[in-house]
Length: 346
Image (cartoon, rainbow, N blue to C red; front, top):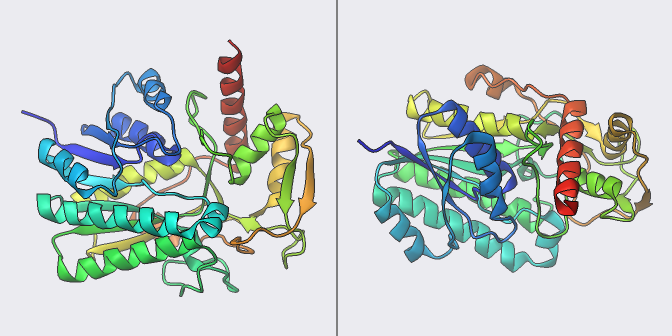
């Protein structure tokens, strides 16, 4: 008898790859990946195998191609759920190239949702983002906080994505969905063998920090120190990628065991603590012993001033508890950066 299967779109990506590891280690499902390596590497699957001993089959297709996606669903029987990560995620790039984001992020989600309905796949987890909240005056934010204007096309695609799922849930109640609003995933797997590996220049803070410390980036820029925050720099809620990954396994089981009270559920995934850019730099410098070369630059288009999460709902309903603190996040990210540097030079 064949195993039930879970499809992970964007399986070679940062969060997707860590979630595959969590699925392998904590479930009995067969895992199928879909990733066209637009901002990831095929080496990711070798690293997953090194950690777990399991080979992952990946389909190299663009999810915006409905016919190719449907042929996968036709071929892969016994799929009971899809975890949908595949999307472009750079805020600055989305400001520069909005078409790329509106086309890819919404078209791929629509194809996934329609594919679920066509092939009877009733459980879908959507990779959303805290950027949906926009600039909020009252912090922390919870799942009922009203959205403000999206500050970037990327953020707006996540607002649109959640609206798509909400509208489909009203018409097709057999489709059960969860939107997980990530705050700022950072760090790497405790093995040090897998972590964030952007093919394109990084725009997230921690890989910029580690690449500056290792010498890949000569000098990093702190984008703005004139915000109305305690030290003038932006405030974010950092959360270890493996904690984010474990939440997906918990959310999947939550759907499969029909614990959801609504067809479309939403949960924040954060630590509940706000950390400024300058504070994050200070923590990294302390745990690594490296002095970072950085300067203060102008604000970056699309950035929000401050955001951090109220974690009450995810703690109470999902029973999700984070394991890693900021020092451990930074230490694992630095361990991963050094691993990449050693393997490059070996």
